Amino acid sequence: MSKAYNVAVAGATGAVGIEMIKTLEKRNFPVKNLKLLASARSAGKKLTFKGTEITIEELTENSFKGVDIALFSAGGDISKQYRKAVVDSGCVMVDNSSAFRMDDDVPLVVPEVNPEDVKWHNGVIANPNCTTAIMLVAVAPLHRAKKLKRLVAATYQATSGAGAKGMEELIVQTRQLLNGEAIEPKAFAHRIGFNLIPHIDVFYDNGYTKEELKMLNESRKMLHLPDLQLSCTCVRIPVLRAHSESLNMEFEEDITPDEVRAILSKAPGVQLVDDPMNKVYPMPIDATEKYDVLAGRIRQDISRNDLKGIEMFVTGDQLLKGAALNAVQIAELL
Ligand code: A2P
Image: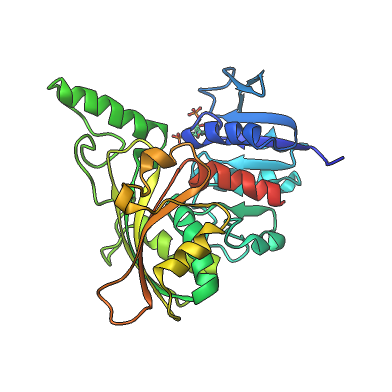
């Protein structure tokens, strides 16, 4: 009989934390005991796991005694603050924040992309940026076949990327705007209702945002391609959940749309949704609450005179493949 594990979810009341709990349940992860941790504000409240109510506890340094795996999604500062307490307790931290992703002693893992990297962890495994994870589930199988050289992306990112408060802001603002009421942006730099914002996370001197450079650096790390050329523009759009991405890829070897479809139709975690003549293509509403990344609009790049360029559109549930599902899949690998 397989072993069961003591699992903790830190940030259990957040948008990702809630999905982590649901994903542990849906995938029937072998949980012996589940500990739900959040701030003092939430301590004493209850959440349900497999039909049983579990009381939320305040996250403290003593929370990890006897815990085997802790899934963290309470922000980077909290992850940094508790790393030592987690590791000293002999517990493995699967961290959804960006705190440790680029650290040399921390593997950054998407199970469909680089499962082998789980093996060299020292107590912490990082979950990548959600947009990067969704992209690489579809891009890694193509890279394995034809060697990726350069990628240019534009993203269309849902408000769920800013947590529960981001989704709430879209709903509240939409209602207020329809009622002609004044709105006050809080979770985003500008109004998100009936608008889009080409700005996710902070700007650097080179004009890129932190989110855009995460796409570059995390892709290089997970694909083991330190020289990968990648540029992107990340945009927040008024969608509740599921991020979309337009990808222009250049490969070392010739590749045709039929070959892309053949590769992706067999790729784990990818669902081919590519029949544009019948209005079939990936859309965020169809990816919402799904585990698979949807891939479609696959075509040869007509700006080139060769067969090395491919255009593709992907959509994935940011809270699942982009966060909670990936964390649980890493726990499964462990
Ligand atoms: P709480 O609900 O008690 O504030 P989101 O990403 O959706 O905003 O969620 C953030 C998660 O991180 C929530 O579960 C939140 O708990 C948790 N959190 C925020 N600050 C702390 C803290 N100081 N200690 C523990 N958990 C925290």
